[in-house]
Every structure is written in C-alpha cells, then in structure tokens.
Length: 113
Image (cartoon, rainbow, N blue to C red; front, side, top):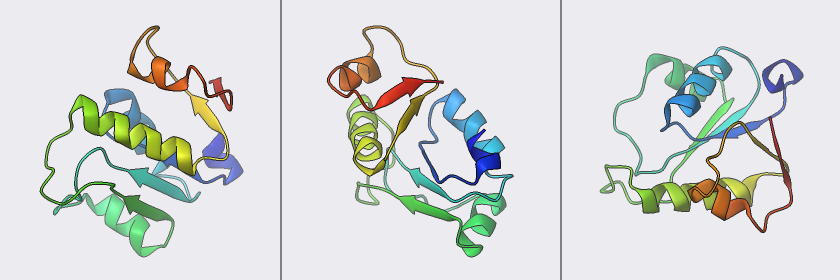
C-alpha cells in the first residue's frame, strides 16, 4: 500500500472512490497532493487543515476560486493535471469507453490497481 510505503500520492477528491481512498490516506503520514476539479474551497475539514499544517498535504486547483462546481470538463482538466504531475499512475477503476479510459488510451505509463 502506498500509504505504508511513504510514497507521495496524487489524488482527486470528487468521486466516491476518490473520497474513500482520500479518507484512508489522510490517516497516514505519507505526503499527498490533492488536485481539485473546481476552485479552491473556502472551508476545509480539520483533518485536511492538520495535514496541510504538517506539510504533508499540498492542495492544487487549476481553476479560479469562482469555479465552485465540478463538471465533466473540470474533471477532465483535473485528470490531465494529475497525469502531468505523476511519475507513475495507478488507476483503481475506470469505465470502459469512459472519460478516463479515453484520456489514458495513448498514455502507457499506468497500471490498474
């Protein structure tokens, strides 16, 4: 598990599976980068603030603060940003023919978890 190995994990936090994985990882001590599919949030959970204070969580958003809702397009932009940042991709789940599947078609630097 990446959490136990201390590897930096780049993650989104929109879909239910992303939220579940984030909840597990935030309890660890490994560094993380959270990439939002919307503008920066104004209110954060205490666990997130604690991880930021401990300098083990970096939160990034490629959007202006006025972008307050996640859309198909913002999720796609966020996924591109994650791919740009990652040294290695591990995909927990993707729908055949879905948005992530299409994005990864030409990207050979990933594996399914």
